[in-house]
Image (cartoon, rainbow, N blue to C red; front, top):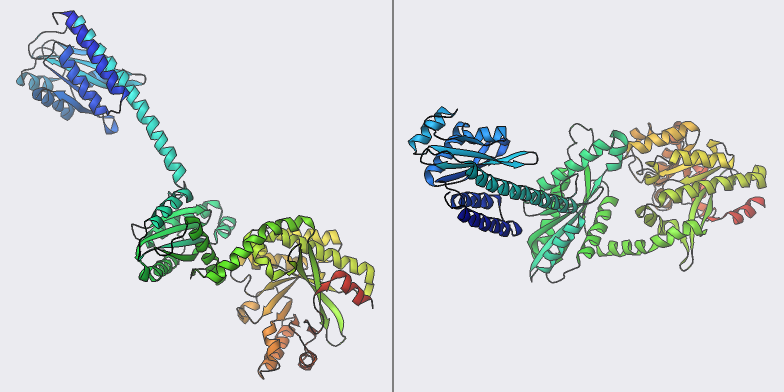
Length: 610
């Protein structure tokens, strides 16, 4: 360039343009296009081009001008040979004063001369960790670039490299922010949206409902996750969750939204319904999800199932998102109460009950530590001798405002709030201690055994065995004096329950099956259970006075129990005539209000001492 002052002024203007570009929102393509334009303005050249690494690190054309130089640059890219490739590989300037006479790229040189280009200089765009690309400048006449020419071109190349580095850092920071935002909004295990994102979408969907429009909400609870974790390990549990997410998406329409909102809980938003079709369509989707979960998870041995609650919101009766979720949650628990792998539609009466139960939870947490719980004991009587053979421990809650509450009024709340383990441990310890106290105070008149009810939640708790052993040891009781009472349907669904009871039976504890005949009534499975006591459901006892068939049924169960080596206790004895009928068919043990209501320990102590 003949006048360095002009080049100097042009270069200052280029720097200003680059600065304005970088401080604004710009793209790499825009930046590289400006580099080519600037080279043509500042340098005494007839053409310029820029190549940068593409996918796999292969150099690719980013920008070039004019058209014949662009074709020359594309020829380099096609053959993967030429001065720009050497400059990139060696990270140093590569030049040729006359391509017709000098260079190591025969095909490229021949094509360049055909295009009327004779002089080239390729300058690497140097970054901290290597070349970021190459700026190549051309002259049509064979005139070698001077030191001053290369210095000016190098200044442009360095300026562009600096801004490319800034661009890369900006894009990395943006990508990191976007990744963090995605991670915050999505569950890492399944990639599904999280609760906060789902509620925002649900809020918008409810707000958009007009007259005659409706949406559905499903609350999906995955059955058996804890069993999968405990039996097959947490990797299998994670795979169960991922597979459940895949099956959920497979059962839904592309427009439906599914989110993971808890360890084993998912929410599904179903939009686009009319008021008339919403309940039918949402229930149909829920049933389809249940069927989708029917197949075992490949490679794990886990058989998944889902309990699903369904609720519908309409334009005429919009609800806040949290209220809708609460109703769907209540419907899910209704489905779960009917057995695994089911769906249930929201029931206002059930929801009212669930709300009442929720209000009990904080009071129950306090009651466990404040001494408000107590045990009442109902005698199990030996019919021939009229002697109290055993007692059943029944928990009561002396609520400061509502008075004495029976177990059925708060056990469900304890299970829902996951307080059942602590409550059960207290009952075990208190019952064993009371039986030991009766031994000291009553001697031979003390009950032989104490029956303690165990819920299905406690059966699958690995701490149950430890609690039983500790309670017996602290009270100084032999294991055979403790009878663990479970409902017939309370453990047959889960092999863990049978395994736990078998181990406790091997320790010497007894097992009573409560409400026998009201649940599964599978005699084949009964043979394999570690039961030592059968308690005949009160519905059979109450039928004695009205149904002729009830007497032979009870007689048959009594004989079955004797054949299996089990004691048989008949529950629900309400009058003397029923007691006599039981004695007539050979029943030895009975329990019911005619014999005694559940009473506090002190009251029973007085009765046994008389």
